[in-house]
Image 1 (tube, rainbow, N blue to C red):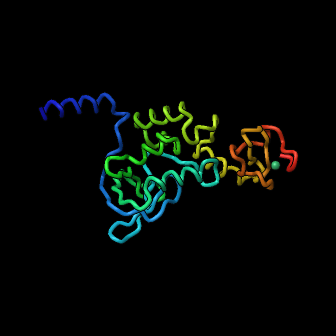
Image 2 (image 1 turned 45 degrees about the horizontal axis):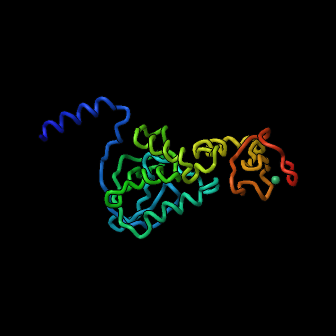
Image 3 (image 1 turned 60 degrees about the horizontal axis):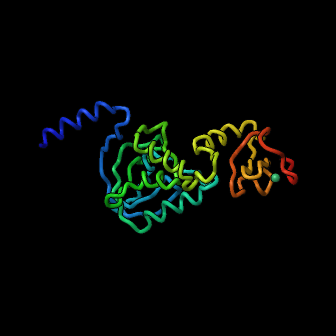
Length: 209
Ligand SMILES: [Zn+2]
């Protein structure tokens, strides 16, 4: 029976090589110290703090819409827990990349399922994560309550490019379609919204957009 299962697994694996999950190189067990945002945590492993970037997901940045809620959602799942991190590698900042497990719960997948993080397709091509995101989107879970949310990687690119020249970044209140400039109190501070360009939406009556 074991052989049959093994052969079957090989067949399945070869049929879906693109969707193969990243290889686990190491398992770390540690207690949660803090939650940085919806895709990053700190744990204590052998009395040393280790920063873990959750594999395969990308959560809204702190200043984006839903950034705070995403962080809260992750905190609620992991608070006070001891977790197992299935390490899959390191990101370009040298942080441990991994899948957070609490018992049988895959926390990374749960964040996508609940609509608090995007599937990070650029670095992960797991079909199951893509499906969870599609499901969350169609159910308008979490950040998908916004019909047109800005992906965190887009947000970071715009932030980087907006430094030069500085005046190209605006904030669009996506409920009222109003554009605010960076000096406005509503910049990055509306219930729904996203960064936008100088030609998006209607200019704000107070700041002039
Ligand atoms: Zn304004």
